[in-house]
Length: 204
Image 1: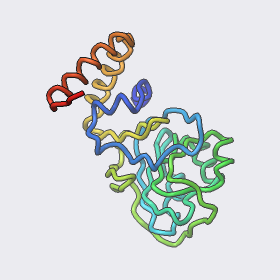
Image 2: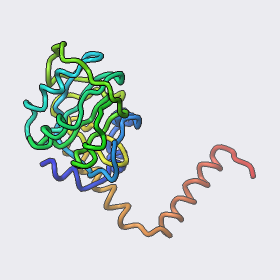
Image 3: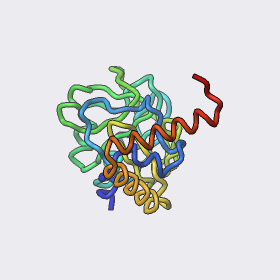
């Protein structure tokens, strides 16, 4: 099922989803070129300065899941070993509203991590919080099972109930764009831009 969502860019989902369903661009891939990933969200909330629940989540997420974490950016939520174990267990990637460390190791193992940045300081393991509850990540409420699609263009959060219709719209947009030549696109674009300028009263 989730492989279908890999067939089009995150940009194509912009025509199918409200703008509020795109995670803020501050959360981005920490290495390039990153592969496109798609899968169900396994959600984690880590209290400030603590990373216990992310470390617990890598042993509880199913193969193909994308771990989505709400955290802070003062201490690293994960490092190379945690990412390596997650990768070995089939986790498709991390989307972290926070920071990680050991980015060179993560890059070398080619494990997809989207985060705010890097920090050498590790967090603590002291605070419990529920797993697979709604979390806030990059300004978007992410529910367990929501479909995440992430690539070099950004991160889309697709509500599970809307998945089929969103995918259909995104595929049609992609097919339309692929079938139009640059010359055709330019003609349509020029007409549209000039029409808007005229409507708004633009004067040369």
